[in-house]
Image (cartoon, rainbow, N blue to C red; front, side, top):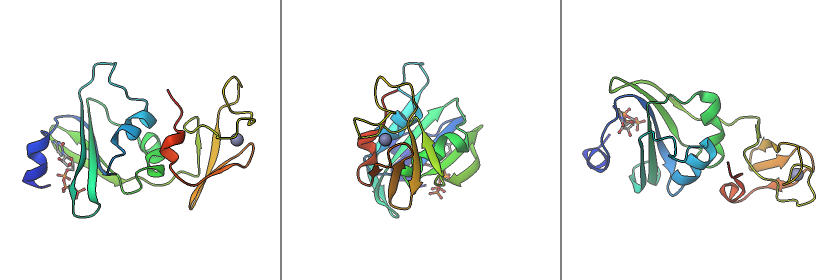
Length: 154
Ligand code: CTP
Ligand code: ZN
């Protein structure tokens, strides 16, 4: 933790810090988590700050809420280097990397307009996670690039 970062956004007392997010992906991280700020919870977003490891990175701090591993692993699709820090009484009590899930449900929209998971159909989207993309379980369409562009609106 550098002084440079602490000047940008203060430490939080309790909650979750998602660090080492791929630069530019913070808003997509919040979209995937279904967090839009309308609940009134304090959220801090820092984007495109210098990082030794990533060149540039984003950070998202969600106060008063401890995100579960299940909830955050889906973030590996767009932020594979993300670290999750659980904060209690200002201390980092847990730190782990996101790990890729085998599949994701209801997160991405299938680009195949004839797929049974698309709009007006009652079937929730389901993608198997591949090494270099994701594959729709229903129609086998593969998305390799810009997964963020396929995030389902919540
Ligand atoms: N953090 C915070 N509030 C706290 C404690 C930590 O917002 N009360 C943030 C830090 O600003 C940092 C992240 O949580 O972005 C992880 O904190 P820490 O483990 O102290 O930092 P580093 O050692 O730099 O983490 P890493 O080794 O994962 O880079
Ligand atoms: Zn499909």
